[in-house]
Length: 193
Image 1 (cartoon, rainbow, N blue to C red):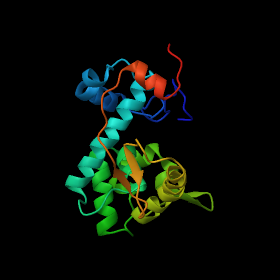
Image 2 (cartoon, rainbow, N blue to C red; image 1 turned 135 degrees about the horizontal axis):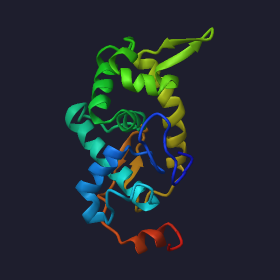
Image 3 (tube, one colour; image 1 turned 90 degrees about the horizontal axis):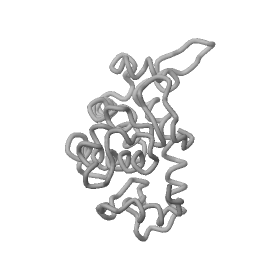
């Protein structure tokens, strides 16, 4: 999103800093808005967008634990794919990756592949060639996980909701608590609007 407050994706309804689709933002507002102080119309509010996206990631981690793998924590790349594809397609992708990593993925996700050609296809002699599940995972890993882990490892861990363990996996360190807008702005050094 390049941290664009009003940024709208050209291939979906994704908006705001964390690029939540209108449906996902509305779902998070219904589920958590009262507790955290945001509503369905606040998608362009930076605080609301970040809160909704963070809460959505927490929900995705729980879905991953119950439907994909509970034996070890989710990696940054796995979480990104769940966020990018949505919970149903994310689970389907990660199960496909585990069962047949050399299978071509675009046919299993036609809408996502059409909207995200650079992820599901690679250019060979000017032609789009479909990527396998493993190639997509490697593409995401190179673009998301390696930089995220490097950045996360440079941060202090005290007070963080998640941290990166020795296996470069996201580990929940504590549950988020509701905070007033003023408290969130003070912690982030954001001027009051």
